[in-house]
Amino acid sequence: MLCILELGLREPNITEHTELVGGAQILEILAGLPSPEEVLALRPSEEMQQQIDELLEKSKTVDLSASEEWLWQQYEYIEHFVRMAKAKAVLKLKAA
Image (cartoon, rainbow, N blue to C red; front, side, top):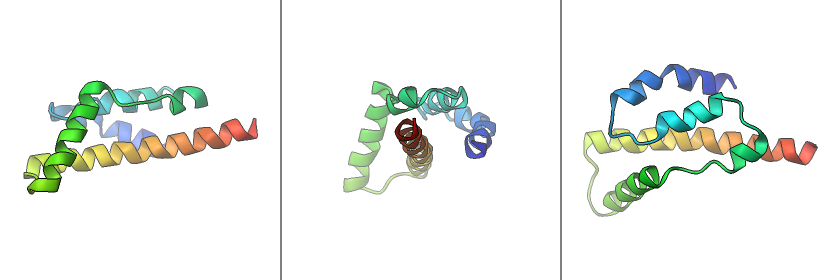
């Protein structure tokens, strides 16, 4: 949980970059201590997924710009936290 709090403290860095779509929203949901079922149901918004897909496709054909590389790294960072939260949610459901 400390990691989520640390990431939440960095939210102003995320919101300063308006091209990063949905990152703050996902962190806000995780910070709300959702149930394991809610964590497992967590998915990126259509807009966020579209931006991720575009960056991934572009990275296959050309180098990303510095700004695009920053965005990609931020999405990877957020995805890491979501995967950790989902793994813990599965463990909680199995233990129940």
